Amino acid sequence: SSELTQDHAVSVALGQTVRITCQGDSLRKFYATWYQQKPGQAPILVIYGHNIRPSGIADRFSGSSSGNTASLTITGAQAEDEADYYCSSRDSSGDHLGVFGTGTKVTVL
Amino acid sequence: QVQLQQWGAGLLKPSETLSLTCAVYGGSFSGHYWTWIRQSPGKGLEWIGEINHSGSTNYNPSLQRRLIISVDTSKNQFSLKLSSVTAADTAVYYCARSSQYFDWLAVGHYYTDVWGKGTTVTVSS
Image (cartoon, rainbow over all chains, first blue to last red; front, side, top):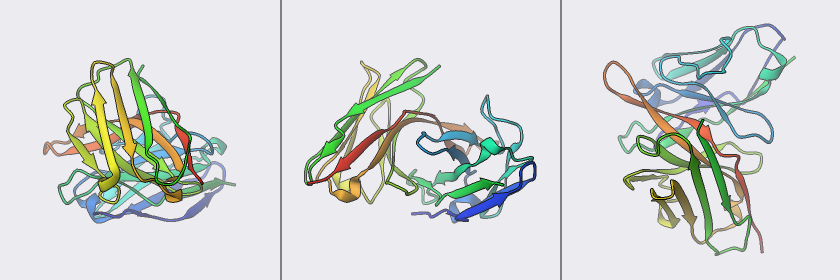
């Protein structure tokens, strides 16, 4: 199976830019998908594919990848962006199994 | 607008079977994978497994021997059964819809775009 590793927590000043990273072997084959989760709520999809934002997601969210590392960047972070962020992918073994990253707590100062 | 409504028992005793059902309203039932995900208190997300409209399943290996995911296409519903539960199975369980995005090499990349509200399941004697 694959593992996806994220930084436990990051902080960003209001209006500044923050990058959240996700590392794992499966990311050499599959794009990372990114989810935002606020306390007591279900996750919501933020980025998928090569850098696709679902309808309703602010354009300050963007995704990128290089090698075994995927990144979610929030450009001009807002107070409402304070949340947990999870990356996700599929197991690169070919078993089509889903896997989530360990999650990153983003604090907006 | 696709909506998922889930239900099931919220309090179980050790060794009992956890049973949850998720109904899909709106949108197409085929062409997607219908997924179960859980989150233990204060922990991260854990992928449980999924099923498509044809009944093809993928299971988390760590849960596979206790897990059954089934589908009822006549009702646009899918269900989760997890047997022999322990306190470690205490979590919020989410049902969700997963889809695929195909890149220029025709590699499928999964994403989960619709989530249920979650059901809190507690296992306690």
